[in-house]
Length: 257
Ligand SMILES: O=C(O)CCC(=O)C(=O)O
Image 1 (cartoon, rainbow, N blue to C red):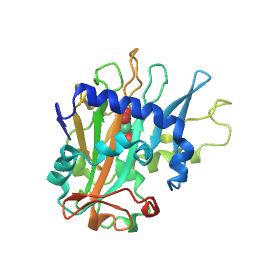
Image 2 (cartoon, helix red, strand yellow):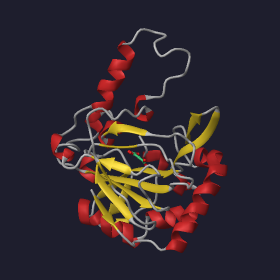
Image 3 (tube, rainbow, N blue to C red):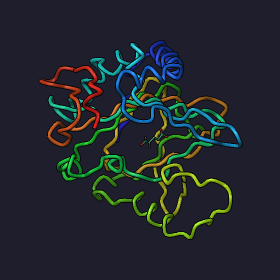
Image 4 (tube, rainbow, N blue to C red):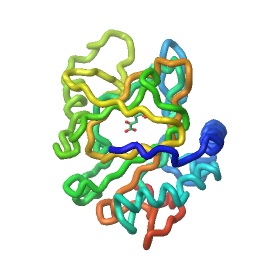
């Protein structure tokens, strides 16, 4: 993974922030635009629901669509994946102070199932994740933490193993408190990663195979990020194009399998 500093300006970050907030009022419109799954993930913490993650906000917020297809992002994606690229995710993360949200150790390739729909995506390391840091990412606001070099390990099925462990537990284990889903159930275990800190406006890129996690936002500031994820077209035939002949393409919700 890598941090590319100073890609977007402070004012551009504030426009992404505003668009990300307005998109929360447009959940119905994202569905109407054709996004076929749950649009908003929330986290319950200390008795309060917090907005955690919004899917495909670029369908309803023109500025987020503008950033998605911005030549600066296009150049980064082209550098890693070439001219024929599909887009696999478009997400806004809120990571509000006090929301208790966490991400357990995982590889993003976990989300790409069934595996037959993603030919050689792991073998060819063909999945690229990108986020724009809208706020500064600091030691105390839940920076993403990576195991350096772990993309060489291949797909090691971390969350699948965790799911199997949880489902093997007898019913009722964990008491009456609802258990967090495995992705949100951070446990450090033996791993110590490298936290990547950066200024707002940076773009962070990582391989879909690198093992990463993030702890909760312990600061008194939001840690908004805008994520766009991509794969080489030959590794994700069912999805809509992001780049065709190197040129950005519109989102086609009918091609979100
Ligand atoms: O933004 C974060 O804290 C982590 C997000 C993440 O790991 C992911 O979506 O794969």
